Length: 125
Image 1 (tube, rainbow, N blue to C red):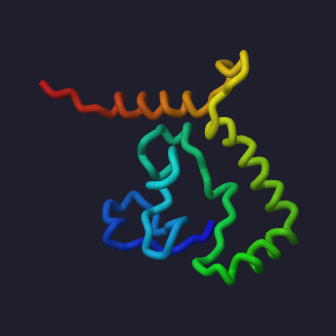
Image 2 (spheres, rainbow, N blue to C red):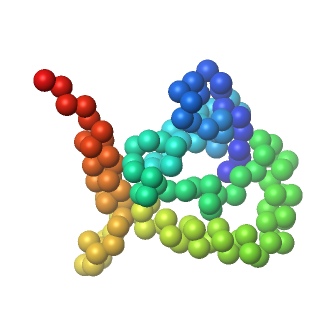
């Protein structure tokens, strides 16, 4: 992803990063991807750490090639990213087979988000 600074007027709650993965001055990446640790919409142990597998390129298309070339020279980092992506991939897709209920998937993550929301509701008389 191309990693650019966000619009400082968008990022005023203090819980969001200052990084947009879309465009210079764009929304923080937490607003675009579900279940980030910083989003506050899921318990931390159910969060998806995108930064552990995404390749961030500085905010310039000219930086794509050098960034990828540097990464290709670091097998350990590539393998770390692959293993992290493998860990989170089931949570970004819906199970389809007869045994899909046995493993956490995107539907499970949605339920975890709902649980987090319900648990954090304030009781009002």
